[in-house]
Length: 198
Image 1: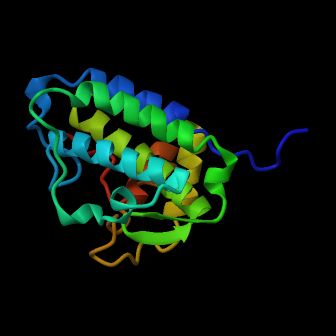
Image 2: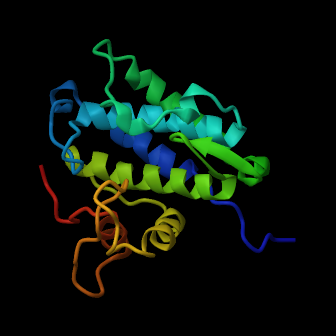
């Protein structure tokens, strides 16, 4: 019997990010991204860190990886290129961790906040979906994320999108034309301009 509300699968989004990252040359690492404070290398470092944090949040393996505010320091990658092997591994791990129904139950912690695990799962999927767009746009690659992930992001970002405080993880929504594609609507709700280019 089919489940009424199947758990979202992170796999399509994480696999998409792996493909994007594989096409990032070293010459792109210092380039700008839609996140004004991040170069491409910082965005990759953030993807590494959030994959570990939300993997551990799913496993309820709480500690420094889940208890640290990600805004306390600028994320980065090492210059030895190990991120190229580490990022696919971490993305696979976070996707696998959230496939376990137990990951969505009870309470957990991420970014120093304790909140319902089901909310943490939605936050994690949204972070990956939005930052996948950031990486694609910063490196001139196409991006066609999983529609289920986009719908999840839309539901999460739409409430209060116009009234976010300046220190919120996402800025106030950007105005875009009515009837814009779902991806553009989600990106605008995250406080980004869908037309951004480097």
